[in-house]
Length: 208
Length: 272
Image 1 (tube, rainbow over the protein chains, first blue to last red):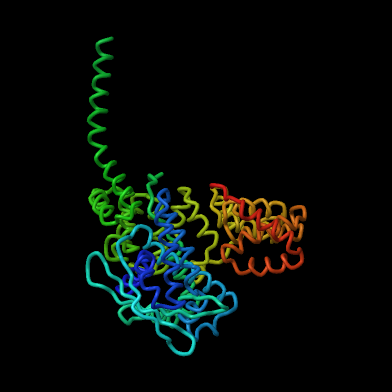
Image 2: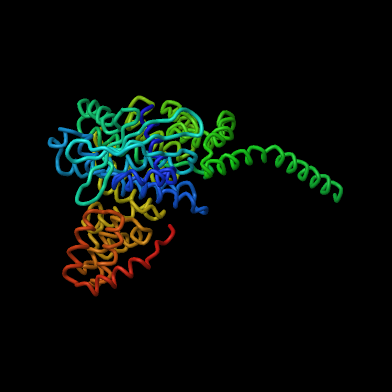
């Protein structure tokens, strides 16, 4: 849970720290620009005054959908269990996992402000990836180090992992899901995800 | 008589005044919490809603549960979320009944209990909560528990939620009518329900409506409408629509594609 919370801060930082990222642009390459662009789009959503919180979260969700390589993350998180799943289960899982990730993270973005993100460096990771190292400075509390692992797939940049203080977001999910799959199979995971994405948001509606 | 009347009126006025003074701070607190929530000041929302929740305001209990569930203004705590939803659910508040059922299915913050989940979903559906009717119709989360799919009941539940404007139920009605699954097969009805959801911007329904137009099934064949709806769905990232768009664009040529793209760009979703 703590990790997940940290991840929120990271994304929030990326979304809100566009100005700071722009300053770092001179020393950084394409992957940094990609992260900065996501931030720019988020700022635009924030500056649209008439939107409700739910609408802002919806738009954040669209921005995240563009930024994350959800297919890759989904496949990685489920690991070897992917091959044992039926085609229908694979399709259900990918759809639900994407929805779950976007909903979870977008629900935290709507109104937060104040975090600033500074890009410290960009370095290659393995043969295919680039890690954009960032530091998130918060109005209160100590700064957080976050590394964004970015990969080009089909000519497009996509975030495939975020490491907060060295802890990987995808590994954390993988660990949580692996225990569940062992206990109740892929169908158990699908059940968990469908229940989690089915919840209703806050409301002003009175009881009937 | 006249005196009695005016005395009675005076009493009523006094009672109304007392009532309004007594009721309005609570109302203002909830509203203040809601305004704070909309601004993204979740700590302030928490501060307004917690005392109301503690004095048994079901709506505040429900929203407090949301703050705990999503870790807004407070550390995420699924047990607290579930406990607040449980209180509001017992008071008969349908959205809390629905979310409590979700946690009973996922086992988040509470021991898994499908039987209890099903009971809460039925209660919320009976109160007219479209999302619960849809979830019961879909029954995906309940299947591992051994609830067998009752297609006729599913159809009735989708119809209930679809008529309330719930897009996912409308889309499923399109599929049920297309396949004759739990009701008589009717391609015109299928198009009607796909269209209701598509017009609200639901990508899957837009894609299905596009396919209906392309094939001329349940609606007069119209390749321009087919391509427009397919583009709208593809723009939302729906994979099957992305493939269909490429296929349709290839057969129709660049001029028609440009025209369909213009139609899609000008298109606006309708409200529920």
